[in-house]
Image (cartoon, rainbow, N blue to C red; front, side, top):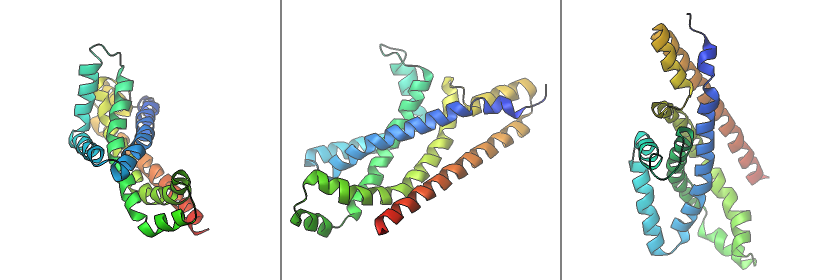
Amino acid sequence: MSFTLANILTGLKNTLLVTGAGFLIGCALGFPLALARQYGHPLLRYLIWVLVDIVRGIPTILWLFLLYYTLAQGAVTMGAMTASIIAIAIIASAHMSENYRTGFKAVSKGQWESSRALGMSEPTLLYWVVVPQVMRVSVPPAITLAIGLLKESAIVSVIGVHDITYFAFTEVQRNLNGLQVYASIALIYIALSLVVAYAGSRIEASLRRRALG
């Protein structure tokens, strides 16, 4: 049976789902972590610092094993897809919290003080003054992270998620045409990375125009 690209592309949806959902959840969770670490109680800041460093220090594949082969096999009901998304989300939230924190640091104290002098409440100040600047600073490293997570997502096949790497492996097992299959997979990941990078550059340009306008 000859190799067909359709066999590989069958898993593209799951690759995008794991990466996209995990990344977006991580972006959402990372913001309150960054906010608390930047402006919270000293004890809370310390605890979040420890938590973020622990999460970043554990390899992605180990998070998958911890979630799927430990939690999911116990009292918690969790499928391979769910465990994969949660693992990516945990890692993304830790990295995004650091990206956001860098953005918060980029906002000068003068802007905080002048905004308060104008009578802005803290929520209004955050929404209109701080957050837009934080987002603009956070986009480039976020896109780099998204591309990294896209490549990291290939390991979810080890717990049975039917992504493009999983289908590539089964294709090679059936037809023993590894060079052709894995070269095709490499091209798919390169193409996806280029799309993510392009989308990120457009978002960054849009945020920059809004800031200048």
